[in-house]
Amino acid sequence: MTLKELSQLYYLNREIEMDQHRLRELEAKALSGAQVITGMPHGSGTVDKVGALVAEMADVWEMIEAKLQRCLQQQVSLEKYISGIDDSLTRQIFTYRFVEGLSWENVADKIGKGYTAVSVRQIACRYVRKN
Image (cartoon, rainbow, N blue to C red):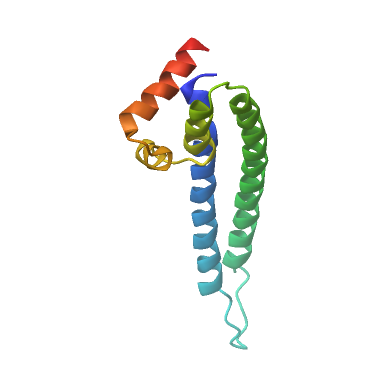
């Protein structure tokens, strides 16, 4: 497995966050653009802006659901790969970085014992190159 493949779970989660943000924006638009009932007749060219926003929200929600399914599949694949690593330290590094999505600095902090961001990254890169 390459570092790029290992990082896919992180990037999928970021995409989901972006889509969720877009969904919240659409919800806010739909609420602020709700139809006001005035009792006055409407022209025949009335556009249902809220209806269009709701349809777009449904599309975004479907994309989020599909990405969540891919995340679950990716996480299972990653966990299987990581469980096959013999060295405990390397397994921890891979779990913190690729499953939990921590930065190299945060991985080093979690590992402790004088490890730096550079050293934990080197351990991961060496493992990937050798395997």
